[in-house]
Image (tube, rainbow, N blue to C red; front, side):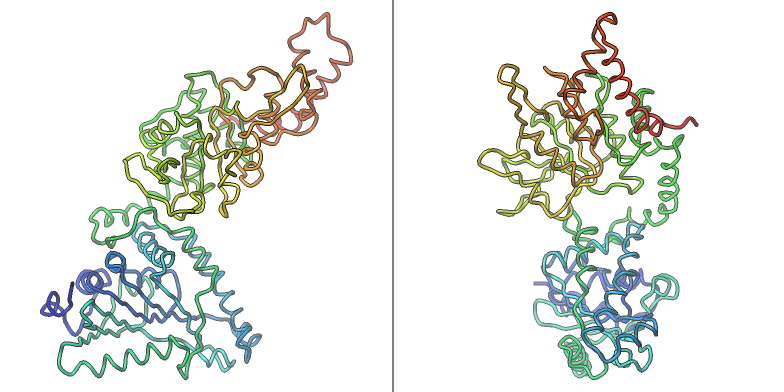
Amino acid sequence: MKCYASELGNSLDIIYEGLGSRLAYEFYIPVLQRTKLYWRISGYFSIDSLTIVAVGLAGLIKNGGKMRLIVGLHDISSELIEAYRLSREKAKEILEDFSRRILQDLDKVADEISRRRIEAVAWMLANGMLEIKVALPKRTFLGLGNGIFHEKLMIFEDFDGCIIAAAGSANETRYAYEVNGENLTVHMSWREGHSEYIKRYIDRFEALWHDNHPDYVIFPLPEAIEKKLKEKFYPSVKPEMDPLEYQESLLCRSLVPAAKLIQQLGEIRDFAYLGLGPLILYPHQAYAVDYVLSRFPYRAILADEVGLGKTIEAGAIIKRLLTSGKAERVLILAPKNLTRQWLEEMWDRFGLRFWLLDASKRAFVSAEGEIRELEKGENPFDVGGFDLIIASWHYVRGSKKREPEILSSRKFFDLIIIDEAHHARKKRYLESKKVESTRLYELVSELSITSPHVLLLTATPIQLHAAEAMDLLTIIGLGGPWVHEELFETYFRVVSCEPSKISRQDVLTCMEMLSWILRHYISRGMPKKS
């Protein structure tokens, strides 16, 4: 097993000073690569401090180690303190108020290094490797002023029982870490005269952790923050290296401003296709994409003839929505024989890393061949880190013996795309007048309730009966007279009939139906000319 004394004994110093990146290289990363247990106290609870705390955690994850973290509240308004003084139960509402600010900051994480480190925190939380508690000064709690939890302490233990303890500057803001630097005083259990310091550090941590400290009140991490971390930052790949160990990630930091500029350019129609890589859309494809994205919610039937690029149009729409942040979770349902094609098209043409749900193997498969197996009984649509999914609608729609898993999922998709969507229809038997919905129609009708954006792709929206087109239009939310099958059939009968055989009443009916479409869709849905 890895041991501090034998592997790092000669290289560890008792004093560290300098920029955070330097301390990461010289202390945090090498120590955590050999750590089994990691206890840490951080003076402030913010996204900056969380990013700093996460330095080197990938090494701890690789070891299968565990961590306990205590963070402090700060910047609490005097009004809030006064409102909840002397009430331990209501003091939790201070946490809720603070949680709202943290959640807002989580949505603003932009640079790659911060994101990867927070992903390590999310991984550990989701896998039971990390516990977080929050410390509130009793001075604040008792309404005697806005106290500060101003501690910074780290305790590391390796697989041989050797311990390293470090204390230092408590200012864990991003500016302090990257510009002013930080300092640490380090004690090692195998060095003479260090044991007493380590014992006191351990006693201090345990008193806080078990809520026995005379100066602080301890609460568990607010559930809302833990849930946000798990859902938004849970990575699809287990973190086993700190971002600083990847040379390319150093470049990412300098590219953040450019990435933000490109994202903003994507909102301008004339620049919207810059993010599609080497792909250039044909005019009819660009028009279709612009039209779909010109009205909210983004619901449409892409019914180009075979070979005109419905998949390309759908991919461009996905790319635009993901790049602009208007969608995060996307599900593509296609016939089983087309799912692999969709996976490769999204990756090769748009650089979108979708995961293919292989039902036979109970696993997710990437375009690069990576396989992530599912746990027994695990709902694939609830698994963290898999937000871009391709699946066979033959499997997802369920069967007589198996209910669709997706309908019992706790997570919803922002955008759902159905390929060969003409199978989502009602079967109409002419002789018996019987009408029977296909399983795919029932599934997509349910999903269209919880997912705001829906794209239906088919070159043949009508198979046998004109009303089949109405079935598709109903799924995407068409209303008014168009959802009445008799009126719908009247319209299609009139447009295919000899003018001399059309009655005045039929003309009036069709005019009313067209007027409804004009008022509700065409007049407010046409892309504006640039």
